[in-house]
Image (cartoon, rainbow, N blue to C red):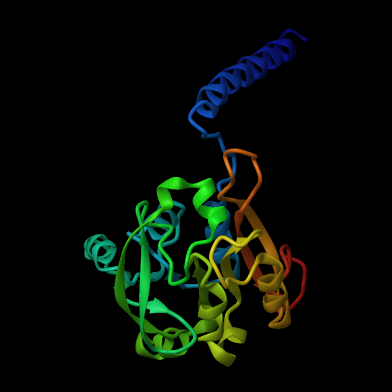
Length: 263
């Protein structure tokens, strides 16, 4: 009985400590997360037996670096169109033989487009920014423009010898997600998993919102697998964006082997 009581005391002490740490982090708009989203993505990649990730909208490589820290050791193709950000991305890729940087935006068709550069960099987009975004994040104000090369997934896959059947497609392109998916054509149906940034209110002019993108992926056989809250309006607490991980209906069900038998 004394041992049990000591165990309860230890649990309470640990929870008290965690509460204190969480309170301190909350003052910095941070939190403790038991099961980080990128760790879940890495686990899903392993579960599906995937060996490649296409990182569309890579910026300076933050997503790929966190994916590496979460345990993924396969091939990463990171696409970033802006010259300054790509220079940093290229430097990081040079230290990892399984990580390739591609200086290009992805869209519905190849060519060149003008990207609107935001002061915070990661909010830069090929679409004009809507007022709701700027009001919620004043540091995202446009500070320049740059003409960038555009390719498509249909071009990228053969150019880098990527097999979509063993690849996770991650798209974080600030409102341009539907155009990226359109550029895959029929090849989209070959991916077993797609990670997509989803907006619940118009943050960029002309963008497709979460409901439309979820329906689009459903039409191609994808279902929501995991969701992480993202950008929120600090004035109201309203969620504006989230990251969704989608897996094809034909992918093996957790707890079963690919042939449908119980593991």
